[in-house]
Length: 422
Ligand code: UD1
Image 1 (cartoon, rainbow, N blue to C red):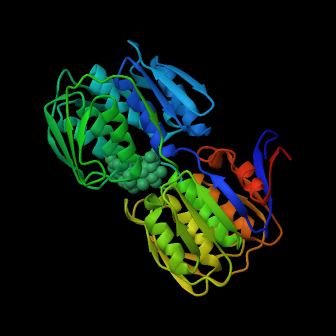
Image 2 (image 1 turned 135 degrees about the vertical axis):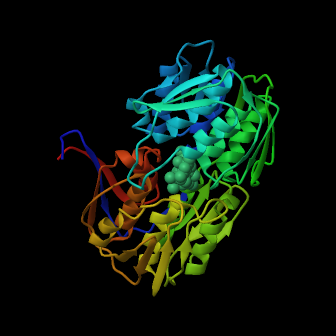
């Protein structure tokens, strides 16, 4: 381990109790920041989490020439008449979601150059649907030297059918369509709450968008977009992570700042496993303890079970009586962290895109490595439930999407510290 590298040291077995407020949704705020490129006026975004992915998106926007100010949980973006059209590899490599500047740049300036994101630790992540949709709208797309070049003197509204309800493709095409002549219909669109938040943001800028939250989006092009002010929705995945934390420690947590309906299926699965869950309008209470039962889970686009909660639920199922089958349908290899969980006492076998989780396990602490953001969260959860000390390495993955996770957990009674170096 290098001297400056940080890790979490966790002593497990402490039930978490109290109230925790989740931050704004990472997967929404990044897109709202990119959407701010659509207007020369200032966009003000509240409830912004302090996480590395937001820092990287701010760098991408600054690299393009936009002014970005960040104070407390408010970000201001002003993308005046700037010259940059390029999202370079050194930034896209650090965060794949940078690809979402493609749609707004083409809509506003008729050109963009964005580094092609590589694969990541959850599988190959293609952008073919983003590019095909743009091409259907009339953009000339070429890929050379690791970059996508998109040029369009004129975009035209089209009827686009996505092969799969891709979140990123839906967002990019929805924003590109705002710069097109006429109406664009996107069929088989993603329905995630973050898509609905982006649509609400765009509508508040003056866009006309119908069908957000349904599989068919209708976007009117050509409206002049103005600055706006918006509060990001709560992060359903952060909330779900705390819900599992309450369950696996036998604790009692009230989780605020999130709409439980955004987490309907994960909460349903937790109930089926024997966890007590009460839903309010903007909060939920989760009480753990007692024996849990095995439950099968299959990830799917919203309103299906979120793939971003798959690693966390695997920890709960490892404690339940019986064998559960977890099927991953969204990403091709999102099980890499399983070996790390098994080192802590889980008994999980992978067969293709199914994980066979044999429950009734007693977890024990050891050194483990976070391979990506949500896998890292799952290892922290396992550490909270385990007997003895767990060290989670490579926590920069966790900092991408959780604001000071260890501080929030400590306030709830967990024994967890961030340690730098040896
Ligand atoms: C977003 C989320 C991520 C979440 C995922 C699925 C952000 C920043 N990230 O990622 O946390 O796990 O949605 O809910 O919002 N695909 C293609 N071709 C394409 C586009 C996607 O084959 O053109 C495939 C991908 O390889 C992947 C699947 O479709 O297997 C889902 O990807 P997508 O919904 O686009 O996810 P992201 O937008 O990358």
